[in-house]
Image 1: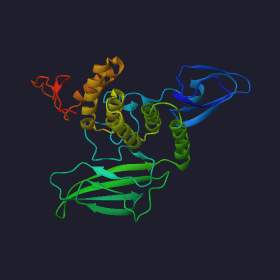
Image 2 (image 1 turned 135 degrees about the vertical axis):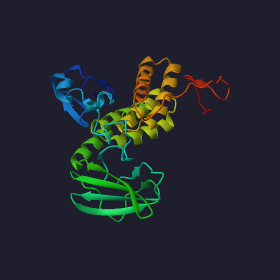
Image 3 (image 1 turned 180 degrees about the vertical axis):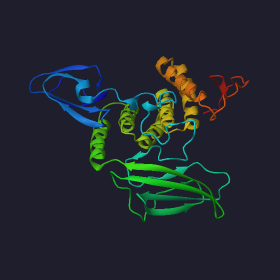
Image 4 (image 1 turned 90 degrees about the vertical axis):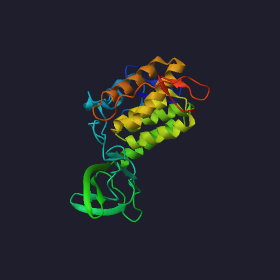
Length: 311
């Protein structure tokens, strides 16, 4: 649910994780400051008997696993029906923090050009063309403003003929909420805990607010520094599932399964297997991979029934 980030004569150590069911007794004239992952904000508890659940809220649906069987447990994702890949997949969610997001979309093999147009209501704010399936936010136009709902239209062309056109919605969080989140994240960064723990804390904050792009960004960055951590692989796989991108999630779950098995981490092993089972159950996306007939060698280890190239 949260983590202690500052003590004002409190007896709890900085960096201690607080759980939903925890009960705290704070002596007179003492305080406790902690980050609540559900709200993404710092909270201060004064003297008295306190239950973490009374201040940090209930268990958020956004923390529960997003699955095709339980789509109501998903954060505000691009496409809640992950059996059909979203056309616009960067940003990875309909909620963004910054005003100048980059855009990527699924390429169409028949297209030789694309356009992306942003609307506020019925007013077109800007339109750009691209020869590839990505576009940086144009520098010469105004950024997205908080509390507005923008319509993003991606159109694929072949010559002058329109092949397909798809719409998506983007919302930018308020400056106030962004400021509170950044303050909480700053306190996490200052804690004397491992960088991977900081990253996972920040991921919890971002995803609780539907900011899947920000979660994926920090997880990718930390994974470069901690490549043998099964939790990072698995959580990043979860985030790609949140974004409706099971093909991107599958190799991450496979690597998490291998690493967790090697470390005898039964918790992460079960989570990774659940992710792979979820992908296998998606109709029309991925066929179940054939079990290759390969033998372990010094350069090509045999991982979970499949051959992988050396690291």
